[in-house]
Image (cartoon, rainbow, N blue to C red; front, side, top):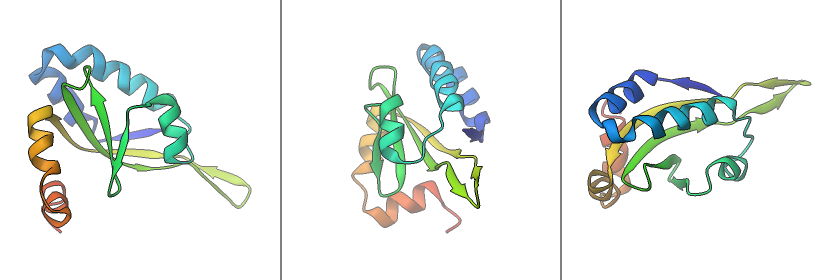
Length: 115
């Protein structure tokens, strides 16, 4: 998988030193992923959730949440189109709880403010 906006992960690793090793481990597994669906992704990350198109990963034993948009691998005209992961946010558990309690429209606005 291609990972976009990895700078957000570098900032999170710097800010939350206790999560740095888990973030690096997530990157390694995600880069090697060849997922064609959310069910495929769950084989690599069993605790991942899909919340209205936002794939949420638990980091550091549920202490943090990584919010992403995943574009899965797909077959096109006999070839394969690589998948991509777009990093949207890295949150503490408490921040995620506040975000997830918002309405869908407000959650989307928080992740895509220009929409």
